[in-house]
Length: 201
Length: 201
Image 1 (cartoon, chains in turn yellow, brown):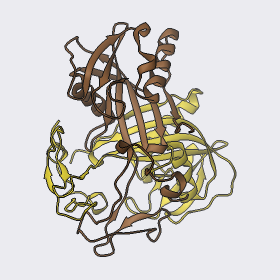
Image 2 (spheres, rainbow over the protein chains, first blue to last red; image 1 turned 45 degrees about the horizontal axis):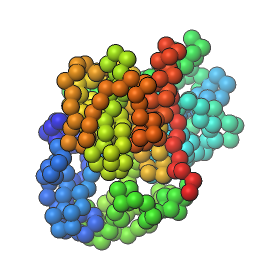
Image 3 (spheres, rainbow over the protein chains, first blue to last red; image 1 turned 30 degrees about the vertical axis):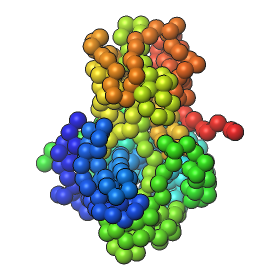
Image 4 (tube, one colour; image 1 turned 120 degrees about the vertical axis):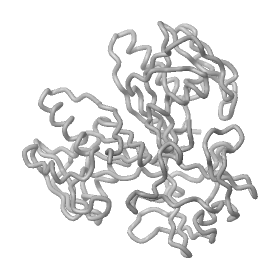
């Protein structure tokens, strides 16, 4: 498989929040790195010829949930980029040392001070143009004691009819909500996995 | 949530292949980093006070598949650590710019020169003590033109009765195969998600 930079272009034309900094130095010894394919590998890596460290860059996992209370769903209005001011489900980068479900619970607490009980994994989307995998869980919002966290402008419990479809922040969120509402109608929740590609410009 | 090093201990007592190097230098400008909680964050990060870069460390995704041909499954005997000499399903670290399914196909090709068609996502396991998420797909082995890749000592098509249960490399592989065989018996494949914790010593 071709190196990432060749397959997908660089992030040079992407918005600032997507632009990854280029690795120029070894984070282990501080020497300048070379960018080449290490022996036995197939992709270009940041290789330190001084101490032998290879800095790998891999996709990040975003974990989140659909917090449900009765017939309503908790959504958050973003106070940060990307998509400042648009609505989303609580979600964020998974951290080292936690499970995906723990990460989804943590994000609900951080973004909405919401206590949720995680039920089942519901949607898994690869988003290759930004090297992310999104995992969204069904969950139960335990009580009404929620409020906006520092990364949210507002937090609301909405019915299906009240979802602001034209002001949703991300395709992952829209597709997850669409599946959820259809499955709730049919009475059977079917996990979905798929890919979300960059829009063609 | 507590910083990773406090919650989970360091990798200091772990085998070499699990031990992560500590970030000491900024990989953007080469200055020495500080390890502290940045403003607005909740976890300790490697922060560069010279140029402002924060080096985040997040869980890695391992993608793999169950390559099925007739009633047999393709398994690989590992030629690398960890678990040299033990049997596994083709799997490895997901790379930037690919989807999870593309990564699983790539790994089958690299480890077993096996051409597979990915069917559905089947198991998703968090492995928090090593900060990994494993995603295993059901797949169809397209032909019999397979052979060991450089990371495999041997590659074989085995029936359920021939699976070397006592020589499997990883818990993820054992649990994925157990679910798969039970589901194949019942005729309905049900995606599973769960966690695999460190064995208590």
